[in-house]
Image (cartoon, rainbow, N blue to C red; front, side, top):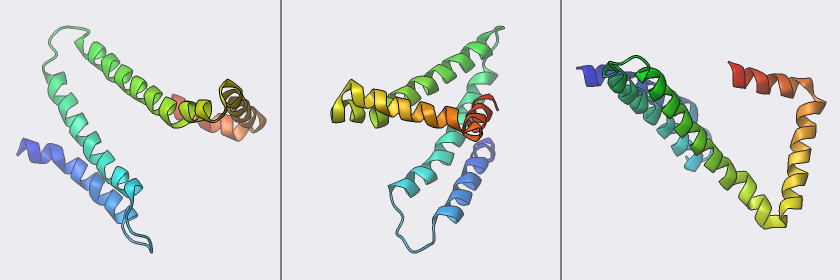
Length: 125
């Protein structure tokens, strides 16, 4: 019963994604699969975090667990970014191409305050 109550939010999230993604004129693709798997994995991960947090008995264990979780997410994001953005640009034209791309992104960030505000909002909230 507790497993079902823990899995229900993940299943509801997956049903919501399915209702948004399935349909239209194109067949489901890899992006649809990612969109479907993400809420299930998030729900399962949240379920596991809840389980481990119940076992925290010493002060500071919850903060250490949260810090480790954030570190793993940051490292995963860094690896993904390197694989999808940095490595292809380095292969394409080396450091100068990477610097050009960075300069273009930086100018887009600083030229429109809406972009900057959205980035700050996303990072802070």
